[in-house]
Length: 201
Image 1 (tube, rainbow, N blue to C red):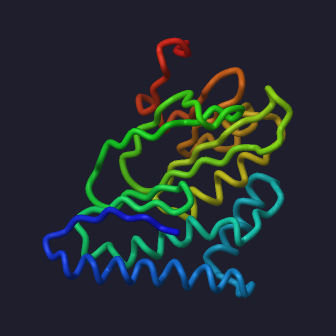
Image 2 (cartoon, rainbow, N blue to C red):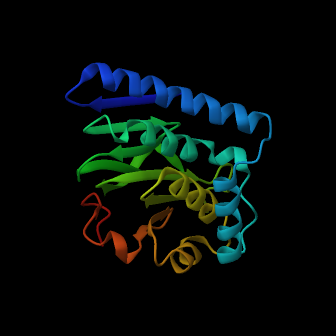
Image 3 (cartoon, rainbow, N blue to C red):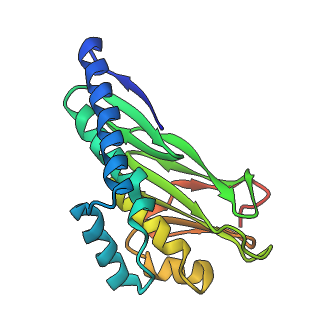
């Protein structure tokens, strides 16, 4: 299910673009349920595997990111700006913005450990599930597109070696990694991540 808030001068055209965006998301879901190959997804999965050595991320787990990209494409020439959400993954379309997005505690996703400034593009957080207490981590990736954010987050959270490994492999990306000890991020997010006063170094 996708939620969208969109703004534009011609509300009728925005409504029709939203319908096209929803149709696009439904079409992608249908393709993946029938196990039809989607070249963009398969290509990115292979590239990430070559770079990280991580197991190939299942194609159907990348549907949210790809669906966001397709929905954004449907809205791009119609809406002045839009905020899209599919399954907790966000995509901002339009001019630069400053949207505060919480970084969840991997041991308790109802608690926020930090806040990252989403200025455009997509943001996806993946958390380890059923990890022993204290060894869980969450990885948040900000990228220009939904598929890239989705795929990198899924691959990085599965890496061995915790946040240390994640930040080495993802040094050129915009990534926040949180574990039970602390929250760390790549240099591309310098001055865009804030910590509560109690957690600030």
